[in-house]
Length: 126
Image 1 (cartoon, rainbow, N blue to C red):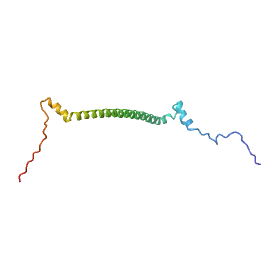
Image 2: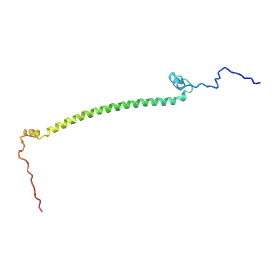
Image 3: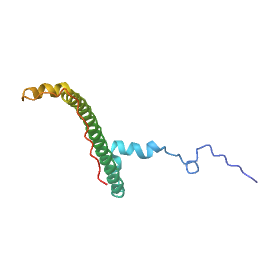
Image 4: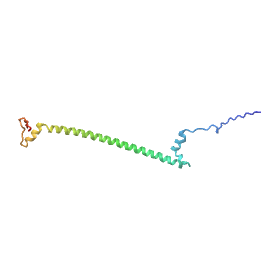
């Protein structure tokens, strides 16, 4: 009649064990075993692409740091030039006062007129 056969041994073919992402991809990269496989020649373009991305990332970081340094340098130069500009404007305002100019031209033998200027009116001919 019907014989039931009981199998107590685990059936490996039905239940395949699933490897994790780390065990499948990261572990072989870290221990270098992926280079020893025959399929490593197929993976070389991908590895070259990853290396290119790493180089681009490093160079981009370097360029960004240099840009930040130059911006800070230019900000410092602008600050110094603004201070210098304010000092030159103050000196110019001081040197162009009427009393300062009068003192400077006294040395040349000129003196300031004490009478105010008069307007001259010219009548137009009709």
